[in-house]
Amino acid sequence: MSNPDFERVRTVLMRTGEPDRVPLGDISVHPLLKEKLLGRVVRDLEDEVAFWYEASFDYVPIEQGLQLTPLIKRQSMHQIEANYAADTTETTERSWATEGKGLITTLEELEAVEWPDPDALDYSRFERIGAILPPKMKVVAVLGKVFTCVWWLMGLEGLSMALVDDPGLVARLFERVGEFQYRVFENMIQFDCVGLVWHADDIAFSTQLMVNPRILREYVFPWYKEMNRVTHQRGRLAVYHSDGALQQVLEDIIACGFDGLNPIEPKAMDINEIKRQYGSRISILGNIDLIYTLTRGTPEEVREEVRQRIRDLAPGGGYAVASANSIPEYVPFANFNAMREAVFEYGKYPISV
Figure 1 (cartoon, rainbow, N blue to C red):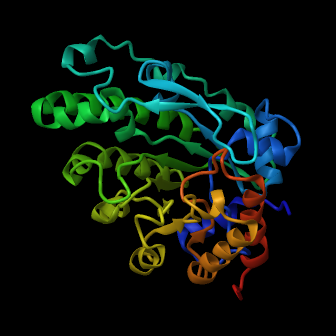
Figure 2 (figure 1 turned 120 degrees about the vertical axis):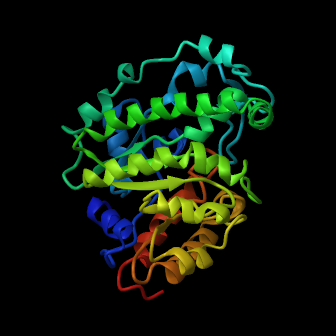
Figure 3 (figure 1 turned 135 degrees about the vertical axis):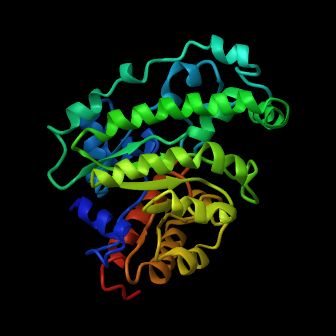
């Protein structure tokens, strides 16, 4: 089934009623699963478009930002190679952020950093995709990472200590990262192919926020509020992604102007309660469990969980099915397909499951 149409995503995020069916809402699928679906390695932009089209998504995600530059990828991370997938013996390499003190611990170290030029990043995929994107598909521009890049650069322990010992350093680094990501946003939003800006910026553990909400309100949310103002001014949409328990700042996230919230981590929040309390003001994407169902459950269990989410959340619109984070390599291919196929079977409006 492949009938992509970004208008169904727009209908869900603008909460203007029920589309023809519930959309799929993930923006990250591991290359190993893309390869299995396509029957070939994903080597170029054409293969990327082919995957998202064949998988029946309504968009193609393209990411850019400070998080992809050597400043983060090479200087602030360390790499681990291991076998993570249950259905393959292949190994993959993963990046892990520094938990202690990071690259920047003083204002002098901050000023000494050689920052990349946001205007010099590679935006060619945004330029090229217009010629190959199927007519009803759009691009999801993936950015965010204002809070995340700060703690990656400082280390979570380093940031936590500096919030007390050197708040001036923290303020300056948030300003520097925010300015960088905002400029990337300005460059991405100019492309007509972009229909949605997806801000991925984890701010919470499964039990609580990573920092006092005051820090987010002072240094992080103002950037998103301004980006969303421009996004809506240009007729585009905005989604916020953060794992964890967001209850303390859900009103703040809505006040930033986000149209959708993802992924509503099952361990951290009750998605039915979130939909009941906030569903008239923000749309909900996600919640299909990664701790067990998608990763260790059977395809039948995946189908049943998708059916339940659609039954509970889809009537009236405002819901898209997605994982509770992303589709990593340790999700069995059969389970990924079961999630998709259950949407096609149970997600047609009017909902009758």
